[in-house]
Image 1 (tube, helix red, strand yellow):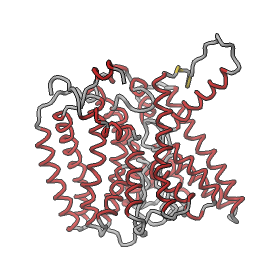
Image 2: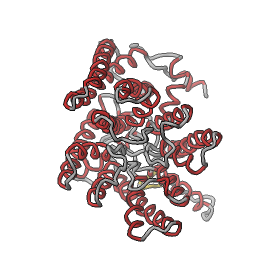
Image 3: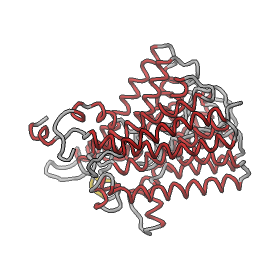
Image 4: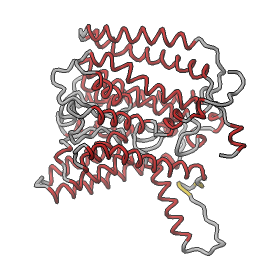
Amino acid sequence: MTKQSTELRYAVRFRVVFKYFGQLCLVLAALTLVPLAVSLIFGDIPISLRYGIVICGLAVFGAGLARLRAPFRVQANEGMVLVALMFLFTPLVMSYPMMGSGLGFLDAIFEATSGVTTTGLSTKTTLVGSPQTFLFARAWMQWYGGLGVVVLSLALIIQPGLVAKDLAVTEAETDDLIGGTRAHARRALVVYGVLTALGIIGALSLGIGFFDAVLYTFAAVSTGGFAPHDGSLVTFGWPAQLWITLLCLAGAIPLTFYYRMLKEKRRVTLDFLQLRAVVIASLVVSLVVGIAMWLSTDMSWSKVLHHAPLLAFSAQTTAGFSSMPCGQLDAGSKLVLIFSMLVGGGAGSTAGGFKLLRLLIAASVFRLILLRTCLPKHAVVEPRLARRRLQDEEIQAALLLIVLFVSVVALSWLPFVAMGYGPLDSLFEVVSATGTVGLSVGLSSETLPALLKGILCVDMLMGRLEIIAWFVLLYPGTWFGRRMEGT
């Protein structure tokens, strides 16, 4: 690190972190009012009492911190610290009412982490007999967890992938980490709300009951995948399965795409590139998985044509719904789905993975390397994507994120293998957690050792915030050093 960069480095200001963390706690308290109301409607009074305690605690704690005086403008490292702390804090708090449904502490933490990170993995072997409040709370956490990720990904200036001005509608909106992104937050909320409303209406029109329609829609638009039934999508016929899959696809596309097309009447090349990439990737995975299923099993063509696309779109959008147990898949299908889950959907969407956009950036760089071997030394060529020049920072961030995702998967996979679990199934489960997908081959269960449950929780948190925010949280320079004036 150069002397100049050290001199320009600023540690987080504690008053800023505390104040805005307090405000986020108040938001979380307001969001928790919804499952409290549901618990009262269904008569789950013991769970209601737990939610009441959580809401009161969050309100008192948040109000006290929010009263602190702090500068309005927030540094990039302060924003990332706030996001990381909130994603750590929320599962810890929400585990208490989860335990009211009969879960142990570790399983409640696992369930809450899976919910808020929109993953969908669960240690429960069956949902039969589970309180309806519990089923609703899981889907509700996924819904606001998905929305939070979209808004926060637009809010963070130093977000891995495209630089902030490329995610913004206007460059002026990136000047202020908090105030300058309120327009994005409103737009994301409107789009998210419209998708949710349309999803519920469509589900009801297909004959799905109101409670299931709400829960499946929450889990679909957030690409979360928590289903209120053991069979996930098996409960419904193909029209309902198709509708839920389309909702997952809608959530895996950048939400700015809808606003720009419908409100601003303008076409953004990068948005269309990601839309095409998600659809094409899902279709390719469907084809490859279908061929693998047909060659390796005695499954009929009609069943292959039914299950392969549903699993492929679920993996690529990182939704995590399934029409058949993934443990019954052949090795080839599992490998294809592993790669699909790791890549994920579009940047700026609710999908997980390291994102298709970054894969396209890496492919563009690789193509340029090959092209330069055929050109004269004095030729000047630039990496381009969607008719725009890629900046060095974009390329570095994209390649770094891909390497970090693969590294997290590798390090998490080794303990599973060391403890005797099958290598392929272990890789499938770890990638599903890191990509915040939720498809499972059956390893996630109450009997899974506590160490491995903890690893999967870490994977879910890592994948949801794309790893960098956690390094910022742990970096000593984030906490120690000079601070800006106005602390």
